[in-house]
Structure formats: structure tokens, C-alpha cells
Length: 252
Figure 1 (cartoon, rainbow, N blue to C red):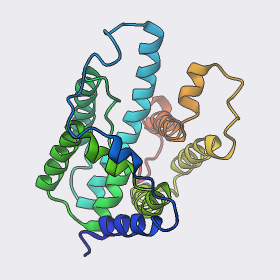
Figure 2: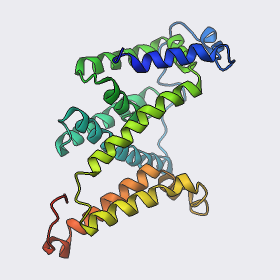
Figure 3: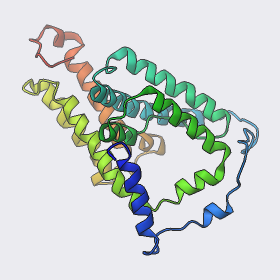
Figure 4: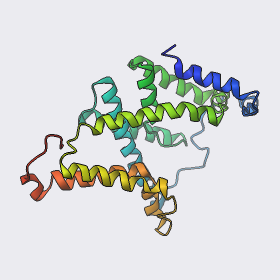
């Protein structure tokens, strides 16, 4: 039951949603049983420089999230949170995104909920992950299965996400605890990264007057937090005069 706890919770929530009128399975009856992805669904490829630049910015945001998720997984399984593994994860995301784009689909990026599931179920086998990937590929050819998954009511997914994303946050605090926050530079880095990263959440229209290409980055709390933390860490610990300052035990 521990292994299937999240799946059982989703199934129970979906069943409870039926008498409450929150379950809509009409899309399942309308979906095709079998289908083949069409790489030309949106027409022939075109190369528009502004669109390419915008997508590159979005992909940088995705990379920031991938780094965090990879480090979180490494903390849970107690291995794989080293720079080499993070780089390989980013390469895998990039390669998968290229293949996905060739089939007129979205960019591929690591998913925070998967980190929460790993922590809750304690299933850490690569074989399970590989089988899950195979099932995801199968969903692309059987639209009716995808429609059944999409029919799970939003409140049910929200309840499950409350646990999984909360777990991601807890793991993030565990990673942060490895830094020496008695060092004023580390404390300032964490404070500004969190503070600026929360602006899009607390004040969604804060960056509205800015050009759209800037809002693409600034409206993402994940991107802002990652960029600020990376920049300040580089400034405080890896440039110029900072190298001659006494080094705190927790700095990188």
C-alpha cells in the first residue's frame, strides 16, 4: 500500500468526485482508440529568429528547474547530486526536447511531482522509471488512455500535488541546509533569491510594464530564483577579491 499510496489516493478521489458532479469522462468516449503522432500536424517547419530566441529563454528556465529536480533526486537516493550527473540530466532533457519538437510536441523537462513521488513511495529502481517512460510512449499511440488520465478531476490532482510538491520543498530545504548560512554572503544570496523569486507569486502584475521578452523570464519565480542565486554565488565566491576572503565551510 505504501508503494501504491499515491495511485490509490487518486483513484479514491476520482470515485468520490463522481457523485459530487466533478468528474467529466466525456472526452474518453470521444477519443480515438489508436493514433500515430503526425510530425506535420502544424505544417512544415519554419525558422523565425524572435520565436527561436524566446524558446531558448524558456528552455533556460526549464534548465534551472531540471537542475533543482536532479539535485533533489540525488539527495533522496543519496547519490547523483554531483555536477557531472546534473550535466548528463540537462543533456538528456535537451536531446528529448529535440525529438519531441520533431513530433510537434512540447519541450521535455524534468517534473517536480516525480521527485515527490520518489520520496513518498521510496521506489528508486531504474527499471521502474524505464517502464514508466515506455508507458508514456504508449499513451502517445493510444489517445483513449491519455483522455482517461486527463479526466482525473483538478481537485484530486491538487490534493495529491499538495503532498508531492510539499515534499519537493522539504528536500530543497535539506539541500539549502548544506550551505553555511552564518556566512553573510550565503545568507544574502538565499534571501535575495527567495525574495525576488516570490515577486511573481505575490504581485503577478509587478513586471507588466516591461517588454514581453523580459517578462518571459521575470514572470517565472523558478527562473528568477535560479538566476539570482547563481549570479550572487558566482560574484561572492568565484570572482576577483572574493577569492581572497576567508572561505566559509559551506560555500561552493
